[in-house]
Amino acid sequence: MANVTLMEYLQMGPFNVPINPPTNPGPNTMSDMYNHSQIRNLGEWEQFSLPTIINLMADTTIPWDPFINSPPTSIAYDDALRHEISRQTMKKLAERRLWP
Image 1 (cartoon, rainbow, N blue to C red):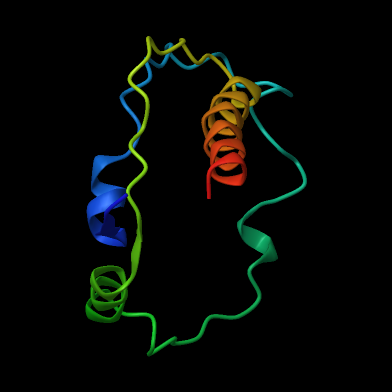
Image 2: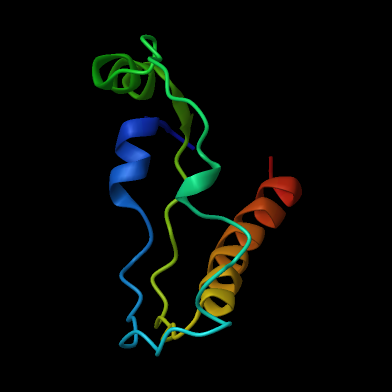
């Protein structure tokens, strides 16, 4: 299996998943645990720059592992999105363990 750069791999990504219109805000769509007031200080992170990230992704190679093109399911809420990400990720991890 040929290697590809991390940049190439991330640009291919999973296929589009249809998204339902947003639901009315409520306890299922908002969290009272986090908000902007929890940010206490800001600072510069000089090593975290676009050129650094692009170079890192161009220099890093990983085994080619294409996403499977299957009919996507509709996503209406956060848990459905988490489930879809887990489903796609766990399948890939399982395949890598079986066939390294």
